[in-house]
Image (cartoon, rainbow, N blue to C red; front, side, top):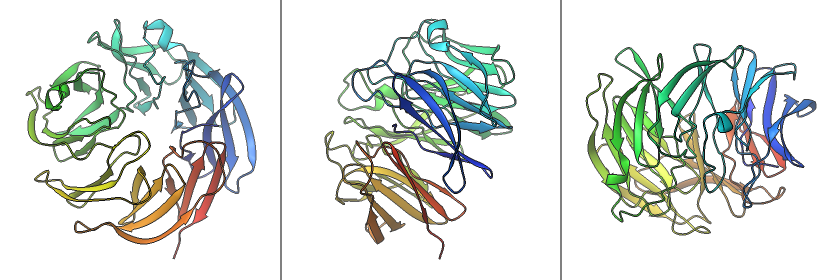
Length: 355
């Protein structure tokens, strides 16, 4: 059981889940038959929703996963555990309130995670043996729930992520901080203890960041030369809880966090920050885009909707309901080769969406 999404390759489907007290990585064939599974670490110790969160990262024939206890593992495509690093213990991390919820990013034979804490804000390990390649100096802040984002700008590559106070841009080659932006400063309520969950959106030198719990979203302008980022606009109406956001054309589509059990869908102009519409459709949920269309997966009752991007209204084309599975429907859908992958707790289904 878990809230992670499947990672789909040409050969296999990889997905994580909790069995007993352990996190397990399972490989399925393209027709849904289990090929192998392997324990890769201990499950989260938090009392609320300890199920697996890490969506596997596939790179060069290997799978990289993070356990609920903060162990980074490398597994071969044949299902063999190659190495593990307990980076949570090594870097003296503090368990965030809702547990560890991170999927690693991999590039240039480096697998990158964001421990936070007193030792390092971000760490890159060698994909072959788990040895440290570089460490980003500590900002003396805990870890968040955000997956890091690779940004390529002006021929340079940066890793962008949240800390409790900052959005930071880190040089992917050496781990040095290029810039940081005080994201807490844009929140109108000025409260502490924010939960940053969503990987920001990047386009053409701009970052958009939005999170739930009543937080104000913001678009900022960044650079790759160390120039301090600047605020472009902010919007307090778009605050997705666990569902994420997508940019289609010049409009951001996402959801609101009215409270923990209810939210609506929203469209915001990328250029101006103006809210175009806010609409209730069952409940808040995850959102993805493919082939010019939007797919929403409502988290409470399992409604799946196909939506036409439209800045004037929530333009629903069709819908169906996932009736199997347990718990909140928090796993984001995945689309691959005309197939829609939907996970609900301990249940995984694949639907054909070809015309």
